[in-house]
Length: 128
Image (tube, rainbow, N blue to C red; front, side, top):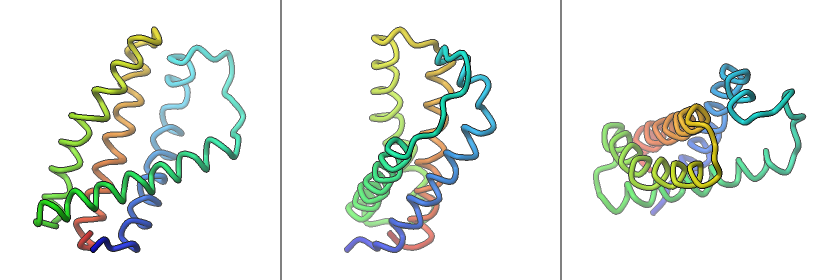
C-alpha cells in the first residue's frame, strides 16, 4: 500500500529542489539552451512539472514497496539506480539527437538526480 502523504511530500520536496537548482544555475542553463534572455515562467510547464513529479514519486514509492526494504538507504539506492538506468540514459540519448550541448545534459541530469534522491529520502523517512 502506497503512502499517499509521502508521495505528495516527496513531489513537493522534489519540485522545491528543482526550483533551487535552476535558480542557482539559471545563467549556465540559459547559455546551454541557447536563449538570448531568460524565458518568462508559464503556468502550463510548471503544472506539468509538478504532475510529473507526483507520478515519479508514486512510481518510486511503488518500486520501494516491491523491494520490501523501505528505508532512507533503500530510497537513495533505488532512486540512484532508477536515475542511472532510465532517467540519465534517456535524457542523454534525447539530448544527443537534439544536438544539445553537454553542459545542458549535465545541468538537467543533475537536476533529476537531485530530485530522485530527495524523493528517495522522503519516501524512506515516511515509509513509502
